[in-house]
Image (cartoon, rainbow, N blue to C red; front, side):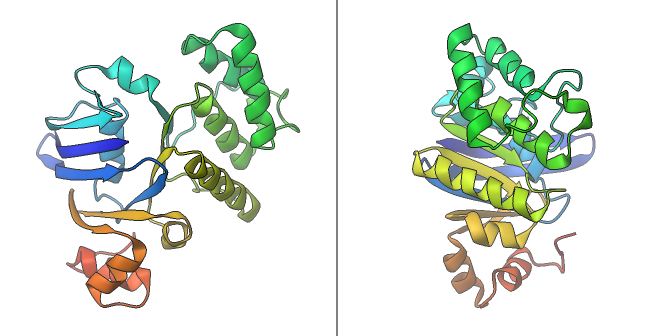
Length: 243
């Protein structure tokens, strides 16, 4: 379970996030939905221990990201907007290296790498250098790397950006499988189709704060709109769009 409790973060004079609170439950896919600049990525970076909150708390299965960041990192797998693969390592070597960083014994990390390569259909590029990978291959390798330690919580920042239709379908299938296995999945997006297709719960954020939470059906009912996109526009107010 991932919890945000009144998280706040300022960059100079800009209050990027102000008192953001929500809970992403185990066995559910939670979407963080908002226009560009709403504070989604900043919120995720605080949850993933990359940024320290100015105030409030973020917890990963009860581990406070500020007080005990190492414990929080052991409980979470993160796919950032920039995959950051090592270009002169193969997909398999990228995965194995992160397994080593997590302290996983050699035989176990080799087994995990084989499992993830099969699960994510990486067989055709598993032993090729990452430098020439397509966007889809980069994303799948980065996702495998983030899952090598079998975390119970997975965070993804706009994971479908730049993917073709087949890669998006594959990612959806994987996220649903993680949910079926009881994992907590949290991802940010401004793509309404992805949120509608995947999410059990939606957290709508605008101007650095949470403006609505609930299932897609509940948000449509709350806004009085039939379509999720129309509900989103009404909920964020002030004429903001997806951007």
